[in-house]
Length: 200
Image (cartoon, rainbow, N blue to C red; front, side, top):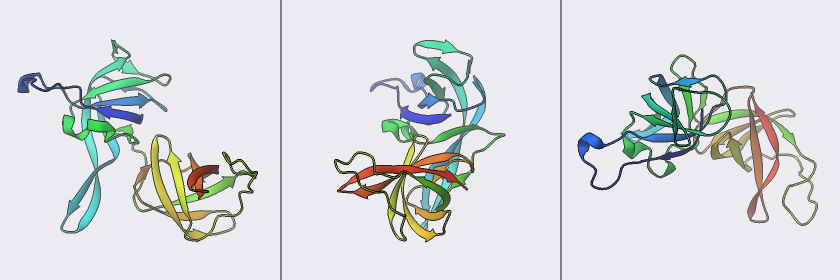
């Protein structure tokens, strides 16, 4: 599941026994999710301890599934839906988990914590400029905006070869090899779409 929203549905003054777990909204890319399933949310929660940073996958259980106001027993690909979970609601406030991927605990998506290897496919011209600017080759130390499903991060190019680039990520991304991302360059003070790339 590709998470585009996360929020807290509790209201000020709710009694402790009436509090509900965090809610996640998005679409299902493949497979199915059922009420009561154990799931893993990736990349997860950022943990900082003793000057070190790590990302800890979040594990929870699906409490209820909603398509609009209709409660259903399972979710399948096609259309937006919401998951009520057993997560602490403080973790889902303000779209804090937007950009995450929800997986079955038996089939986890790969997480790229620090770097990602990409096989870019650039367009001839830059999208969204008044003049027809040529895209040009990617360069060392150039920043790229990377959109991976609902996640967005900056990647600095650290290695360039004729068919691939390696980027150092500002934020981790959960995406499998073979999937595609959109890449944009900072041109005329704005991020402009210049192509796509396969994760390799």
